Image (cartoon, rainbow, N blue to C red; front, side, top):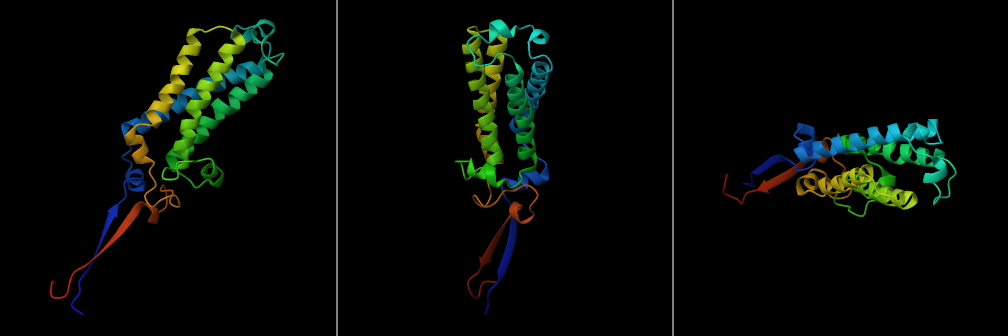
Length: 198
């Protein structure tokens, strides 16, 4: 048969970009935001765990926690350290390496995007909720609350940017997770010409 089969391999928009190391500036900025949140939440969480009275942070548990079910800052400190100190670094690892996490996939309603993208969105939501609860318990709003509320909003805004969504788009649907998989970073096109056209 006079047929010519031509195979062309094209890099996909998601995994191919990651392998080439050409990450959009918005993605790099999102990495910075996650690290920034993690560093300061780790510092605050450890301070509250070391000194549950709050004196190290310039707060008094007897007055600040009157509207809360806690008698000291120990549990809030553990929660702060785990959720906003450790977890953002975990999310950062997922965004950089893009591994396959079954548990994260189960929590991801956006099946066309990698689960790490969704977890980043959840971090932003969590930060906003944390500050709202904190201001209610303290019955006051300070510059620190406004700053970290804005940080949560900024994480959400950057995560939702089109360039960030394109970067975390799965090239072959929900089953592909890009990253280090050689096959996941390529699409194969097969062109078959009609007989007589060589």
